[in-house]
Length: 186
Image (cartoon, rainbow, N blue to C red; front, side):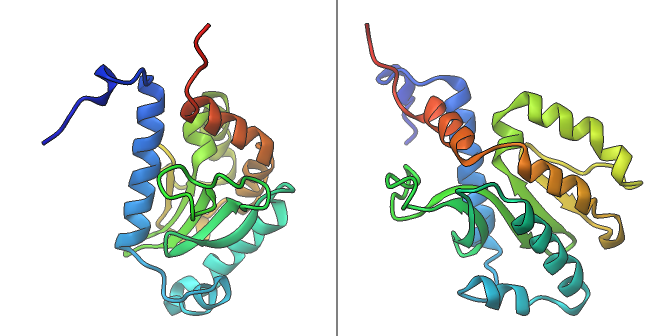
């Protein structure tokens, strides 16, 4: 039975959309569990044709992560998160999980890169969509926060590095809390 909770609790549509996107990422990561329980194991246990581009993309992401983010296991996959030491509340649906921000997965037909900042910030999204053709001949294959790379030789590593630097950990916490934390009544 589905209940429209917005009748009982004032929740914005943008918040519901953001939460739906996070849940989708969670389900995607659960459905396509990485082969390993540590970052190092995941990076080592990839199909042969994905090993080099996946590891290179991971290195670009890590090399460009602003202070406050770290690579970690997030929902059974490779994620880039804000650790509990900086955001003790964790992810609201599962507080034992660190606050997710980005993720990387080797799917059946592509390497998928998830970036919540692109979904949460329309200016960042528009910048990325405009810049993408300057870095790749491949048509952009993108969902709300998922970018699928089907041709490994067309992964725009430099652009992904720039994207990772566009949002600080505090920026992401602010966006997340803006959507999640209830507004105080006057």
